[in-house]
Amino acid sequence: RMNIEKSTFKILNLHCYSCVLEIEKAFKNIEGIQKIKVDFSTEEINLEHDKELISLETIDHKLQEMGYQLTTFDESEVYLKMQKRTSVIVFILAVPLILGTLFGYFGFVFPHFDLLSFVLATGIFFFSRALLLSGLKSFLRLKPNMDSLIFLGTSTAYLYSLIILILFYMGVTNNEFY
Image (cartoon, rainbow, N blue to C red; front, side):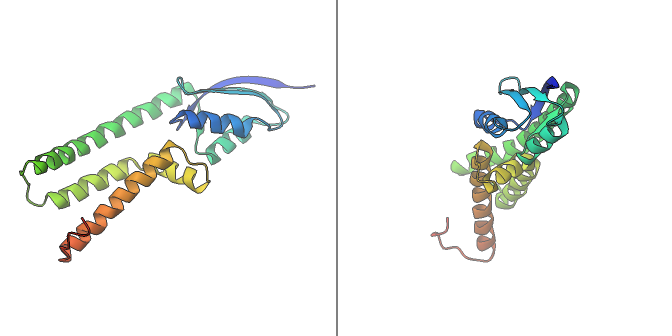
């Protein structure tokens, strides 16, 4: 006799449609999972599973290994507030970086803007670490997604800029590097 439980949860760290496909494919042939439907637009997961064959804890653990997390609707509101706060902080750090760079194209160079840019970019990198770590984990699991692309692009740009900044302050002014 099957003991089917139907559940709906919010799912955290769902960033693109490939995440939906990855989750549905991973759970498709697991014993005890009768139905799994992930809705990207609502960030919800609908489960039908046999409680005697697979527990919600086991499902949540597998999702966490993949970089996702089941949560209640109330907990997702807290997560959303944290995400909004992080977005505001990143925006505040990005505006002077963008404006300073833009003014630089028109000849208005601020003193030590290179160091200020490094500090601002480091702050942006730090506050975006959840997204970047998600991308790194997906990349290392050989299941790259949009987060992996963001991780590779921003990490490469950040490290390249850091190397150029260090070389500049060491006195290497060869224009081949930048």
